[in-house]
Image (cartoon, rainbow, N blue to C red; front, side, top):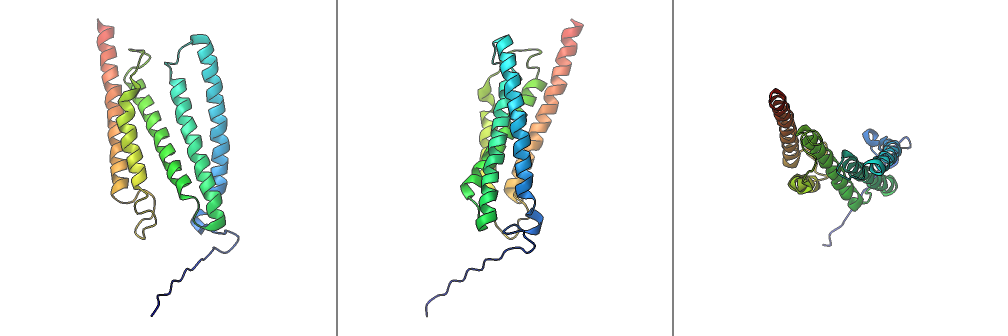
Length: 197
């Protein structure tokens, strides 16, 4: 007896199209976020150009923030492409969704590294930084972001970060926060010692 294959395609009522009720505002929200973040990116690029024309130095928070904003805007744009496609066909463009999460992870880690560098005393106690030190953190975050796709549509997942990969990402972020806090305390202690001398 030949096997039969059946595909059922259901759409939500009330003009929601392919989106479920709880996801119905995603497309509009991402459009608003894209406009806001692209505007902020433009302002940041403008301030960086003004700073560079006066200081002639790239060793400042500006280029790092511009880099993080660029990846954040890219993440939102890719997610917007995925959602537009999803609203039409119910599956979206998976590669756009994957790269959206990777860009978002790069943006988050870049801002975390910037905050950790500033908490360590960058621009107060020392002027140059080694950008290679954050590469390990970037790599781990990107791998964890990609692991969220292993069981993407599993019935036991209620959000993207459920399961082992979500707990690993949460643990990594807690460790980054603890390291950030330690850097602040260490910088404060070193500042007090240098002030006492």
